[in-house]
Length: 461
Image 1 (cartoon, rainbow, N blue to C red):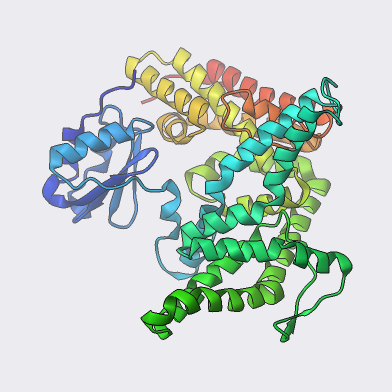
Image 2 (image 1 turned 90 degrees about the vertical axis):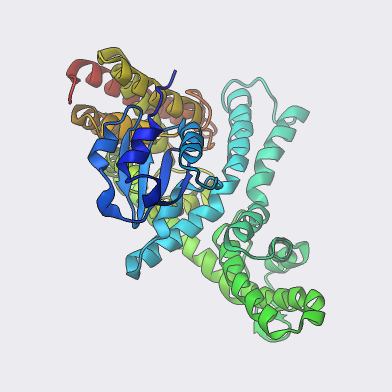
């Protein structure tokens, strides 16, 4: 059972309710908007039972609680008489600030915000592809490729990838604020049999008689539709300003489709596809020629990428490769290794620590990682408070990542959300050797982290 968090003490240490302008929360953190930073005693807040750490962010104090944050938030709101607000996305911090860095952060936050909502579709795809890979002709041979069940399951997995522009049109419009129906129409234009037929025939036409279209097959693509929806937002805003209200219902959507179809087929679509191809080529070259080095570095530094929000560019490059090839060697394998290494650390921490409240911290962290793939409780509650555990985790991941990169093991299905088994079956779908080496990498990360922490960990203040 998670320890009770003393919300009265937290409110007192942030300067009382008079110093709080508003409060909300995300998946793991209580986010308190502060009027005067000088009245905060951050060190004392860290010592409050149940608090795993704090982080300041431009007028906001983030108190890291873990999965129980919603209960803590309700108690805090009730105690201070604050207005209850909707939970926010944990990644929204990336876009705050000014200057070039803020622009880059905002770009990657927007990109990941467009992709993240459809992760469930990839989980479904990964599950069906894993089932067909394990029970199909490539491994156990229990399902014949011509059997109805195999055709159905393979078809479900393939459909999600093929019609990806539709899924992204929906999620991007929701994230960026475009008209969702029009975004879906634009995705339908890219995927139209008429357009696909032109691409197959190799005879481009001039869009509305003006600009020649570029011959590109947009099935399974992801950057083109995101760029199209991003520009659609501004086109709709402009049209809504200049077109009289009485005519908006007809002319805003119609003119949006005319403008965006032209830009999409002739400019934005090709730019997105070429950018995606460039990212894919770069990542594949790195993986082919220095997989062992890339594996050791990415896996070892993964904990810091998560903690400091630096995974956006890597995730974007990875997604480009995954969409083009159906397999990833750069990022997702090390996500699986990292997750199981954290499980090993948490288990050892629970067994080794003598303090009851620290055992509870370890249990919360373990539960969060196993059931929700939420690693912040382990990062802030265990690793960043115990340098030995952090060092063990980094070394364990580096060694396991080295082996994974050396054997060129790749992830096919995004099944990380499944407790324990998901980190193993994600490697199914290519060859038996790929799955064996992937599983060895994951077991190696877990075993090295667990054994290292059991041997080296000592109670720290």
